[in-house]
Amino acid sequence: MSKRVRTSKKLWSNGKWAVTTYGIECITDTYIIAKNRLLEGLDSKWTWVDQLSGKVWTTREEFEPAYLKALEIYFPNHVKDYHHVKFSTH
Image 1: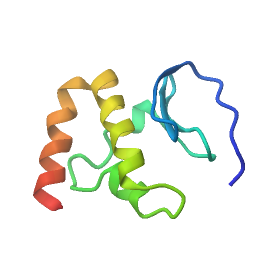
Image 2: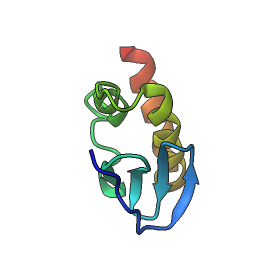
Image 3: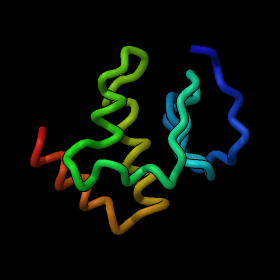
C-alpha cells in the first residue's frame, strides 16, 4: 500500500490510526473509513475491528483504540453497542 496524505483535521492519533474530521484514517497506509460508516455491523455482530483484525498490515491492538475513540467522538451513545458485540462474540 502506498502512504496516503491526510487532508482531514486530526482529532486523535495513536501513531498508526487517526480519528479525523472525515472518520478514521490509517496514517501509515491507504485505508480510510468515513464516519457515516462507523456503525456498520454493530447490529449484526460484525464490526470494523473484526474486519481490520484480518489484515496483515495492522492489528486489533492498533485499530481498536482508534475505533473506540471515533465512536466516543461521533456516536457516543453507541459505544455500549460495540462493547456488547465484542463481549458476546469474542
